Image (tube, rainbow, N blue to C red):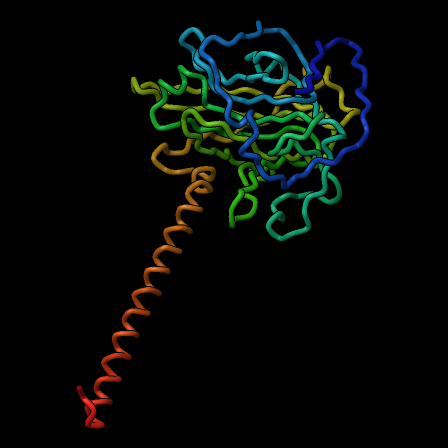
Length: 312
């Protein structure tokens, strides 16, 4: 897997590459080994203050329990071995290679953009950063009771931010997060799962996103950690500047999703099953109706034969 990981310094060289548009409505590839990953118990954790810029390769956001403390971290899988990093030390470079056109369809009208946008895609594209989330840290998977709430609580930067997933079934794009709504926007994530989505920035520049991970543990305690994610969008964005940016917006209340209720992602998973049940019920109804009509036709034919004096 290609890796572009550099320690941040006062002068950052611009990575020049040929334009290769990303697909904003790309479909997930279930055969991709990154989607069937295994997270080990004792993976390396980078010390705080190890600032990096990552412009290609696979990584996930996810909760991890470190010394008994619940923390939202970045699992950087863009190198030979995975490394857990503190989000405040990571700048995600969304290069011009990640530009895409939003499909001109009504179902994408929730994205407030004209022309090209910058997309961290749902499906991996070589040379483009590929960011998802997982709840696969073994201690997290053992400890949570009902799942994790991943809560979007704001965007700071030029233009708008949108997050959505493209379902691989009859449904269209499923909106997760929209910076034009000034409310917290939680999604429910089941334990031991791994997901990728489309992260859309409508303007280049330096961007911050505020995310929280909440859960109730099996011992009855509630845990939460909130982090600021940092994005240098476009080749000209200044990674050093985004690393130094402070969060200045007023945050909406972070209301979690009830663990007993399926979130958008779970409802997407349930949709094919619901369709299958519907089709099975419809098929049963058609079969029953055909049997009924056959019996009725047979009765009517015998009655007609009896009236004609040819009853056997």
